[in-house]
Length: 117
Image (cartoon, rainbow, N blue to C red; front, side, top):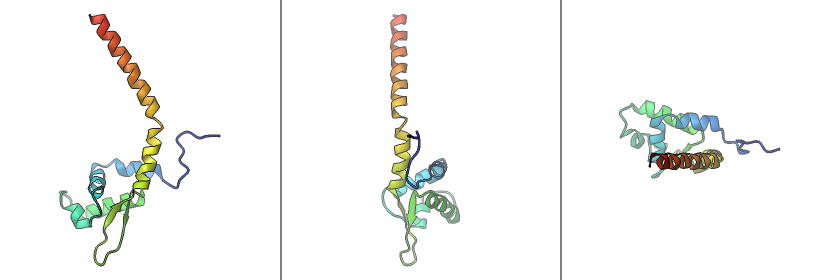
């Protein structure tokens, strides 16, 4: 029996989407898409404290969206694409629904335009 919306991997989608709900964390992920960075490098463009950025990084790490390495004195963070891919895979299950909805909306708009003419 196939379960809709079920992903067999160990990805915790609740944690992923909760982490992605915060705009600061999304901005951090965008920064890390350019390559690994230290907490100081990540914190630079934000008007929040370095400890606040560290807390955001912990949420992202627990969700499996980033990993952190130990490199001498630094703990650089890097994006983990496979976790993001699992979220995208789950969302893609709704692609047909949205395409159908948009097609129906297009049909309605075309009919409305014809009625006006």
